[in-house]
Image 1 (cartoon, rainbow, N blue to C red):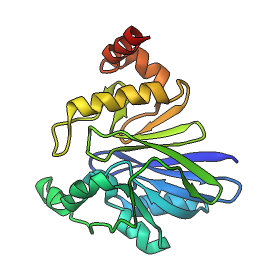
Image 2 (image 1 turned 180 degrees about the horizontal axis):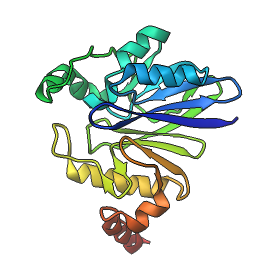
Image 3 (image 1 turned 90 degrees about the horizontal axis):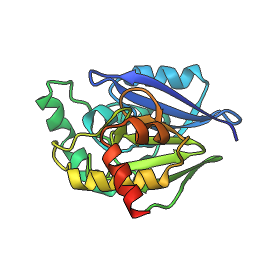
Length: 218
């Protein structure tokens, strides 16, 4: 199988909306479709892709703004971790707080409650639970591509001062990621450029203390 990852930056928070595409079948999966539905639809159509599903790493407003539109356009199932229900329920209220246009709160078709792989066409996504930025943060892996949402960025990590955030839990998730993700796999974050776990373990000021903690247990 040959996987390609395409992205478009959407909305005032400059969120990365992803399309993971099987180039043999032209089928794809959307990850974290953000605020600008027309831009995401254009990306999907430009690659002549048939989307099969929507996966979200979490449910903050800048990651779900286009979900309802994409669901209706292609009759797509929407997957989200069950612990994100509280975050999703505050979507419209949070939009008003940030003075953003209030979209439609999307309906979740499949609440994720375990770490079983998800299969769409020829594409198999492994996943694991990475809370801390939000209560139900989830990381998805396909081949050597890792979609980490707002848990980890190039040179930084997700904030924990929003409702449902927890600093200690986030650090446990980061340790889990450091132990689980292959060093050279490409990390696709919710904001900013791609990176690798190898680079973050060397350069990310938030991961360097955790690296020392890991090494002290070896």
